[in-house]
Amino acid sequence: MKRIVCAALGLLTALALLAGCQGKALPEGMSEDALLEAGKDVMLLVVQGEYEDVLSAFRSDVRDTLTTEDIQALALSQLDGAGVYKQIEKSMTTGQSSDGERYGVAVLYCEFSEKDVLFRLAFDPDMALIGMDIQQP
Image (cartoon, rainbow, N blue to C red):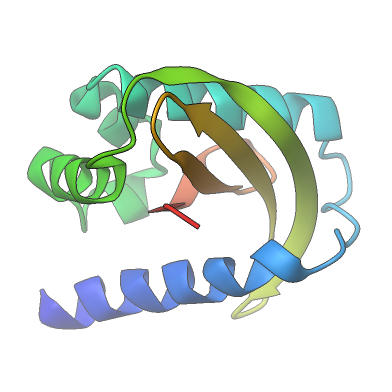
């Protein structure tokens, strides 16, 4: 289990490096609008505390390595002190690859009442969630 958590954290660390990067091409057939909409949907589920629904959005192989409690712990620790969600201030998409798999990442800079929060949500070409990172920049 520790190996799986470390692998997931590795993916999240890689996603964290994307914050300052110019967006790269998305996988063939992946729409920027659809990716941003999917990212927004997951971000809103997190903000609303719908952790079971977030878990359900993950692709089955990733979902098998996570629990609702893992998602809740990430959300609560990274949203602590941010206040109430207001809006998405900026967004972008980028294409990435890892271990031969191409995926798209929706990057959402969100305004909360107290602090801004950055969401990075990675989706495979079939629009299944495969990674999530939340940070207060």
